[in-house]
Image (tube, rainbow, N blue to C red; front, top):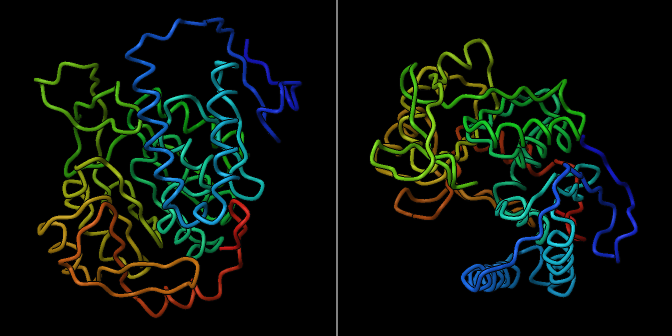
Length: 324
């Protein structure tokens, strides 16, 4: 039976946290290989903390959060409810790269997450394609107060998404669907053993894989005009856009966050009237960029002046001690 301990008397590893106990009593010995992986992961995390805009000025605070999480989560060996932005929380577990990045840095994907916070209004619909455990969904529904349609195809990850929706009490605004988005209705084979990196795989994939339902966005979003989409589907973005060419034309849709880019994606977005842009959250500045610029995530905007006005006039939010 699941129980919850609030303000548990742990040796100050957590502040304002809850520990979710799930009847597990495992304490496996770490192999040398696991220890090496953990050390490598810690170095990568330290590099993130050093360069992240929210923590580069307060590395000590970020390192304290890192130590609390790394030590405390291993002692407790259970999911832990961690403070997120304002009164929102995230249920985190060891190995959740995106979620733990939020613990250390406040907003793991700083520019994109801050853009969502600044551009959304309570009446808007935010579409979260590849929602994973729901970091963006929680930001949009809990902090920005918007409506959300979140898609996550992998059953275990979908349960974690639902858990974060429930614990933040945003079920009336956030609808979660256990499915993928794609070009046509059918099924897709997904990996199920790569945590935040689960993706569409071929028959030759040797790890754990599952079949999941897939629907075009043109069907899922019929008569559901959204202001912003976020698409993070590990290389399947083009197929998702191919299944949403009709709703992509909706004039209400003013921004699309995409992970990755290609000439095919550029053609679809430009044909729909979007321009590639970047956002600087600390000075609320939007800059139209050349399509030749490459990076991990891309921001596409249709009505640049409308989006600029929204971001400029959005209320300030304090994240990791920094006003954004």
